Image (tube, rainbow, N blue to C red; front, side):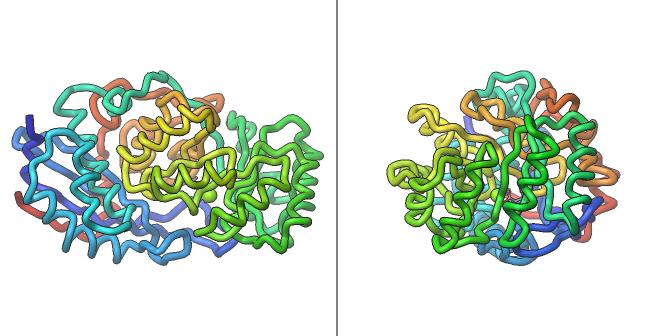
Length: 371
Ligand SMILES: O=C(O)CCC(=O)c1ccccc1C(=O)O
Ligand SMILES: [Mg+2]
């Protein structure tokens, strides 16, 4: 049976994070992005979220490029083809190179619509079984170590059981040493967002004394060769984020020994179907995965929760609660973390209602495409 899409809407939103978020490449607080909405003949509404940022610091995609690709290419493909299952979408989109975040934003709305039409939770539609998921929190680079310890303390009090700390050259080993001294047993990991090169190998080997769960994306955003050399010289597992855009990349990285862990982000890999394929392959190979984050609003967060119910998502993800990011999220209820756990919603689709008043409040433009 085909999914009778009647209309697609692109809602452009502007939201402000409660606190600025600093990575090795800069500070960020204002977020512009799209919520995608796919509406069927019966009036069911499926929602997706575009995770591209305003500028191309994390990957080459931006809000503007994803809008261009969605409007001028991807929607046409959906208008011209029948879709009987959301897994069809990535195949149809394969004639367009990369632009994975644009693809994922549309595919996500179709996955939600599909699950709502079937009256099953998105998690179940994906094959997930967990009723609750473990989550951690990603903490940006803080002005001082004192601020960092204070921030960690706050989130440990809130129940988060795994802490990710952003690092960059000159704000790395010493900082992590102090954190480790204060929290001898806390599961801690570090994310460098590509701030190092292989010339830093000896420096990075000092990580091994800190008992970290992993070091995420230490080297270039597009590298898997140098990462293999670094991994051979490190006891600390390397986790790849920026370098992995597909199942094909995953296979190559694992074959080369570039990493021991993969951070799966739905947007970075072009959608839930590809994310699921990467998950399935890693499960076969015994490679641990976890679900990364892109400072999403509620819709993207709900998609991450659904994906994380798959069994190989062994380690806690970066999907923190709504209140960590937003004064008011765009879903009801908001995502709540208790004791480091999120209860997976059991209602159809993403399992959270869109808070239309909040959506309206943050919306700066809407574009509509009829089918
Ligand atoms: O809390 C989140 O959503 C994840 C935060 C995070 O680490 C991150 C946020 C924006 C872009 C890249 C990254 C990353 O994982 O590298
Ligand atoms: Mg990362």
